[in-house]
Image 1 (spheres, helix red, strand yellow):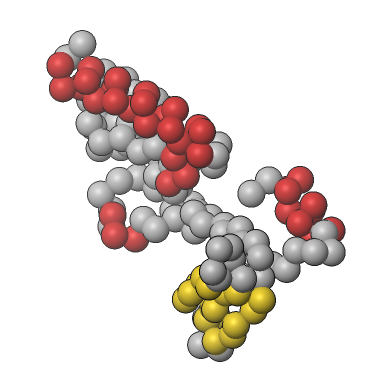
Image 2 (tube, rainbow, N blue to C red):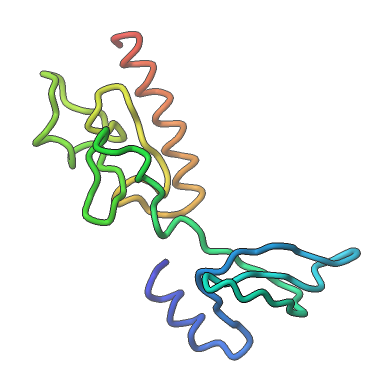
Length: 138
């Protein structure tokens, strides 16, 4: 999240930030009326609430990759020019291509991504073109 948005959220009197909690239920008849969540310590609580904003993706879930792909210091997947030093082929890597030729990463999981939905959608459509080039040799 950008520093600008963090500052606006912190300055707002009507926003409460709850971190590291699991949403267990959203309740209401025709609109959101209450939420049940559980904190990391196991504390469960119910709150009357009408709006919810979830911030996900700030901590990349890449542990399952092991050492399969090159990651940056924050565990986001390196792509394009960031994998040049370890690139095994004579051709240059495509901009969204990981350290494993033919494997592409898009969206928030990618190192230095913009972290916006619209950007991830655009990257996804770009990756389709790159996959076609890898598979078809075009």
